[in-house]
Image (cartoon, rainbow, N blue to C red; front, side, top):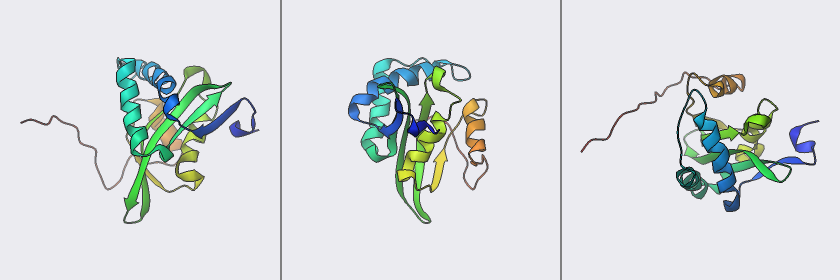
Length: 151
């Protein structure tokens, strides 16, 4: 039986009221290897809220027994080949990983109709392997650049 078929768990649209619970999971996920990031809850909430405000229709939570246990924050925009989606964040609480939750969250983006997507994943993370299993490739016509903006 699929995840959405179980009565005590579901993927649903993210509401503003879900952001703080999602931010708690976000902080826990990014504190782990390979990230080792220390997020303040207020900053994580503000970060996720910003993406929710850009495109609330691209944000979903996975709810288990009435609690948020995972989330995806994405936004879409017109592109020369149709709609393009940028998956900004995808995270699942540790006890719920490797159960199809992340896959269900990705599949709910764009109303479940598919389409192209871009994302950034840490190359040493399980996330990179997960996206490759979904059919994403790390090669493409664009490269990701990182650097400081100096005055």
